[in-house]
Length: 240
Image (spheres, rainbow, N blue to C red):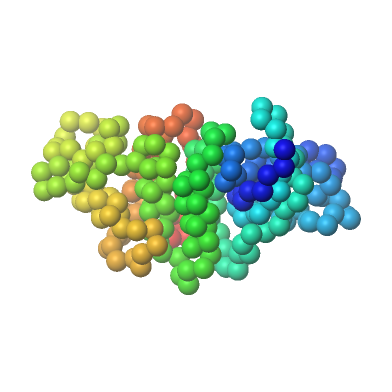
């Protein structure tokens, strides 16, 4: 049956001399794999660049349940990036987010709210004049909610240490290796109450930002199997 849906390209691999297999997170059906025929041929109407990771698509697809490879009948860019491809900081942040999304989303069920969040996040990343240095931290915090293990913001003067296994703030940082120190737990609380689309106001040093990213990656690893990333070090170096 044919359906119209938006999609976010996450990953592509060569399938033949002229075709690719694309893993696309769709608004209507969740994560799907598509065989895209002829896209790499010289006469292709739509060039391979239309299937680059993070491309936002408007698609008409032929969908059959339980079929391992679906088919795209028609597709076009639904949003044209104007800064991400040309801004080193933004493109590196986008690469980190892409890796996080690819490693985190494993369900083939639709989640329209999560799709909208991811879609809007990349549109915002592209259109904002200057990269918020905390954008990736805010994305990870908000994204965790959609994945089902959002951090519980019970922060107070007493419960002021964040414990990563349970995802809550506790009253001491002395009894577990998964507890974050008081200063950076306070920063985490400030980020939790900060909207993704806000103007940066939190004072975070380079080393604190690096630590917070590592903590959040560890938090994801505690809640997702085989969650390992390659891109954080590159982003940390550029933001330094």
